[in-house]
Amino acid sequence: MASRGHTTEPGHPGSRLYLVSPETADPAGLVAALGAAAAAAVLLRLPASDDRTLINHIKALAGSVQDTGSALLLDGHPDLVARAGADGAHLTGIEVFTAAKAALQPERIAGCGGLTTRHDAMLAGEAGADYVLFGEPDRAGSRPAFDVVLDRVAWWAEVFEIPCVGFAATLEEIDRLAAAGADFVAVGDCIFGDARGAAAAMADAAQRLAPQAVA
View 1 (cartoon, rainbow, N blue to C red):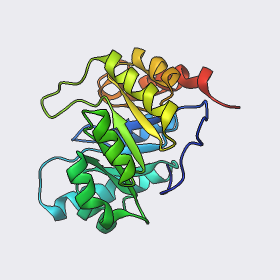
View 2: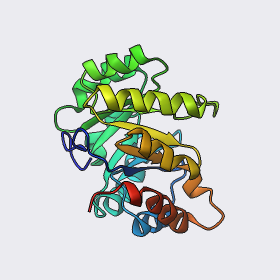
View 3: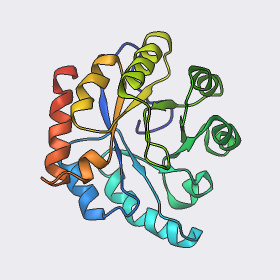
View 4: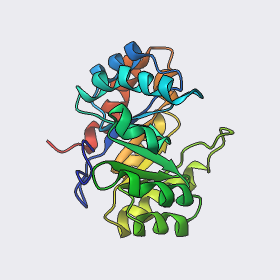
C-alpha cells in the first residue's frame, strides 16, 4: 500500500498489518511499533484542532512513518493530505468517500470504511475505492459481531479483486481474519493498549501472520 494502485495481488495468500494510531499519537510509540514489525500502512487518527496545528502534527510524524516503507493515511481530512505530505485518506461512509475521492485519486490512496451492508461495500468498490475496511468500531466504540466481520471479509475476498482490510479488536482475531482472506489486518488499541508495550504487541501481531506469509 505504499502508493495508489500498489496492492496485494488477487488470491495472494499473505496478509499484511495496517496500523491504526491513537488520536494522540506519540511519535516514539509509532516508531517503536513499526520498528518491531512492518505495516503496509499507518492510519493516523487526529484530534480535533485547527488545520495548521493538524498539518504540523502530521508532518512531524510523516517522515518516521514513511521511512519505514508504510503509507501514511489520514482518518478523514482529505483536504489536508497533499498539504501535509500524507499518502492518502481513509473515508468513512460511501457518501463521504464519493465526495472526497476526486481530490485524492489517482495520485493518492482513497480507502473506504463504515460499510454496514454488502450493498454499501459494492458501491464503494464500484466508485473506485483503493480498499474497503470491515469491522472497525464506530464513534461510540461499537462494532459488528466478529462472526459477521469474518463473513464479510470472506465474501469480499472470494468475489472481488479490490483489497479488503479486516479490523482486529484483539490480537486473537488477527489469525482468523487472515485465514478468511483479508489482504490487510487493521490493529490499533490491541497494540497501543497492550501492557507489554506497542513494540512487543506489534511483534506478536506479525508473528500471528507469519504462517500466512509468502517466503
